[in-house]
Length: 577
Image (cartoon, rainbow, N blue to C red):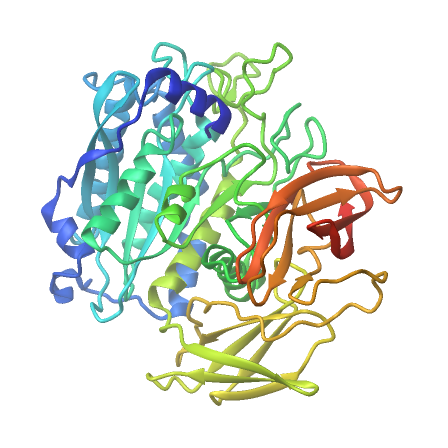
């Protein structure tokens, strides 16, 4: 996991001004499948396992902690997987690691009637003095070319120590990010035995630690080739359960705290964000398809921010290029990657990010820093959500209006599924209410708060589509707030979520666009002391600002919107951690 600040400094110092060039897939057959130019009968398995209940069972029972332990043990032998490391050796360096992942994909394909198509995504860019690089990916063709959209499950393969281009240190990178790569390989193994309407891609990127370059290359490639990525699942630091002395907010309650039953979903945006809607879809699929069957239920937490404070990951380039993308990360992390600090003693971005230690001197690891059972549970969450996204129906369009005490939803569904879900959300990252309708016309009681509505179609097997856009059908005033000199064309809304994690989304509505000289958002304590202030720009409709207060802060605070010296609104919010 890279540090955005150190990465930016490094990029400026080395004048990395060029974008990736000469991006190509080394397997033209895999590329044609991504483009939808193939006969699905060619990749139809002898035994088709495609019913959602069977898919869930196969993933839940097929994911193996022992398999992922084996992958991690092998990855550890490459010693240094820095993007600039050795590409010639067959036993150490990033080249050997890439070829091993490609070999694993090839072995999985051979065990499954040649249905998995391995490839490299090759591109040119000067990273750490190396000019050409390769992601490794494998394509599992969908069995229905009329079901448009590609699901991508990915993780970054490269590792690092303190120096971004240190190619000599022991950079085993087991939590960051061998854990994510093991998850991707395991899902390729399990899901290649199954059949999905849409194509699924499993990918290990490089260049993440130097600026998300491998992910950017694939996002650019997808845009250039018009590959319809419908969902991107980025897995970065998904196997550790122990809290370090430091951790990028939001994270651990304290040193050596253990959390083996929670995973965090990071994604950009709030209202009408495709990325947040994807996170909500993933959580709902886990709750409804897996949780009651799981031996150890997991808490899936949708985070407010796109990533931890000051950090970034491979989902960001995909989001920047218009694809719905999110990130899975462990609840606890062992470090904040601030390796330049003399007080930094955690494992992340050091030679200590190893798989485990030998405590009894028999030369066999017996105490592990990656929890294989926890990693398996996160793998299942990925796999089931990816499977449902790959077989689910088409997302409908809709309109919603307010009429007196009710809200009226009218769904446009040319495919006539005849079964729909209506999602209502207020001040939380999660839905408040989910309604079911067997008609395209649905009426529900209007909540007494600002609310957002989205919909999904449901197929004959009870699987919902990815969720639609969110619509704000109207604004509800909060009579409990103090009197204010409100501007008629601006309304400050309740922050979401509230109470919240390390970050919250503060929204305000502008209708129509107004002319102003200066707009300022202030956050203050109950004594009126301003703790944070930011100048804003307006656009017509919904405007959002992510406010990060960090971790271990509690209490009631106020936020105010001031336009040209006039108070446009004040509300209260609760810091709950």
